[in-house]
Length: 236
Image (spheres, rainbow, N blue to C red):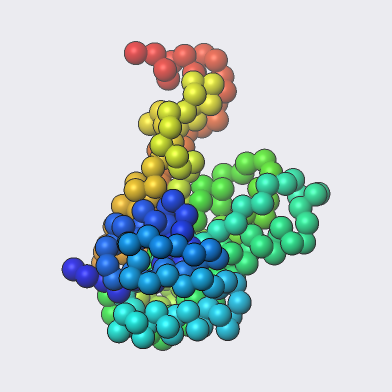
């Protein structure tokens, strides 16, 4: 079934995979131009501004004749410890992932009806701490809180709101010395896209954050830090 999709943050590898997984018609939006044929059209805009986000939603709805799915995949990840994170880095991370999500949702919710869906792309960094990404982690954790809130408030209108939380996405095999992934590798963009389209279609699922992380979030750190447990895990 063809769904009218607005994809925010469409030019990344994950964003492009999501657009291709949905198929037409998809209107994309991002900070840089993208001419990929997966998009019916692509708008260059910064949705961390409320006025811009409202305009983007209105333009997408006009072009598509309405909206069925909104995907929130925009993100910026400054890498710096908290004590050297600048105001600009902090605001850029929250603006890309959280402000844009809220402003787009606020504009889109009046246009969404029974059976529609919002799917956000979060990250395992929202609930698994890693060094050097305080702004990104805070933005993604806030995004997950927003997902749950919107799912509760708009469920009675038949609007479902969910998120996926990818781990490392690249597809390469994780070196033995860094094998925190039970599946033995990092993920691929199309695997995240498959989870996004699943949540867009899952008619009795709302308010969830689905890890797409190769099992990373279920593994105790001891399993790959302690040599005896590492040996037990990796034995044939």
